[in-house]
Image 1 (cartoon, rainbow, N blue to C red):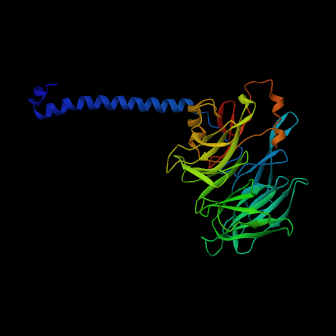
Image 2: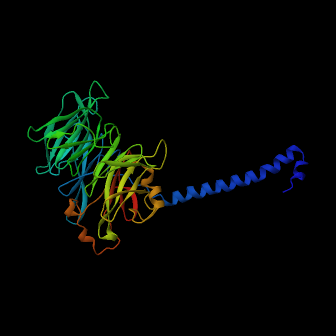
Length: 392
């Protein structure tokens, strides 16, 4: 193109002519941004006030009931099957503030801070589900208990030394002595416990995965996990999956762990999702994520399970491909996708420990069990009728 006629114009006129296409381009881009903003707003559900506010604890199942508490609050909520359907009820701590919940499958255990200050004092309190009352209390000397997990009928706790915040220990609730007993000193904070083929796998935030079997600990971390900073761990059809906050996903390959790095930052909250359209076959592993900085890309990711229900390294965003846990990707992104998911659970059938009997809903082809998710600071959310929103 010959631009000699432009070059012959005065500088100010040349500048004005050159600014015209730039302004037009800016208007086009602004229009696209506005369309994107309006599209996101159109898919955002009308906000609800969460029944369980703030930062909910991990979601646990015991005796066909679901339990979740309000972290640093004093109330625990129970979701159960009653005459006429499911409903929520709640009860209070005997004192102090709630840190976390766990279960041995028979009773409920709560990490409690009696003064409301986690680094001041701590205790593990048992809520007896047979008597619906608080009975036992367990403490440890020299450590503040920071985490609590249940695995294969056993309770494990992670403690931080009072005088050295970089010094952690792992404790086990020994039924023979009815007390919390240290099973590992000089380690990293305990971030998860799960039963596997070889024993109980204990994930730590810096010292890899440790094995606990028949009351004793292995001397070294599981192969290829040394110094890994784990955020959580789960068993999927007997295969162990662990994740880090830096985006690594580890899968137990039998002779040790292999891993890949992904673009997500995992919180450690995970659950298996079963597909009604495939005879309730376990099809996905839902994995909570937290975006970096002020990012609004949070929510969770979906790991595809193979035809035998075993984990793969095929990880994608909800709604991208089938099978998926949501019916609309845009609605997912505009709702739970804007909140870090710390714990997540698809409510299982009654025969698998859940509060719902799936057989009651066989006549409704559109019904799916709710998915509950604890967000970082916006309360408990649920996925119902194709939409994520705060659980009322």
